[in-house]
Image (cartoon, rainbow, N blue to C red; front, side):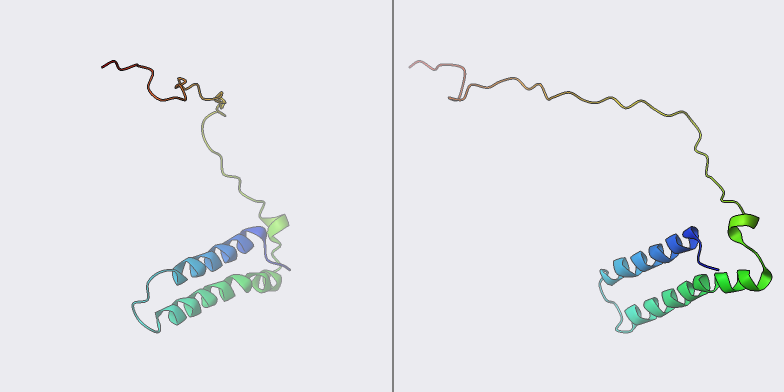
Length: 100
């Protein structure tokens, strides 16, 4: 048995959270190590799921079809904007001529 796509996504999200956490300012010296250890424990639980499925004889592909999330509403038409129509400005400066 192997890890499902959803389990792989969760592991990638947890690893992304660890990378983002590293950018936070350090408040305690051991904080980063403790955070990473906690994430590693969670990832280990997810990685053990195929072993539990094999022991119980559950195949997630056959026994549990993926649940699709339905989003209410209709597809919306997107309108493309044309080129910007800005008024032209003379290249020599002001359009008004000043007289003394």
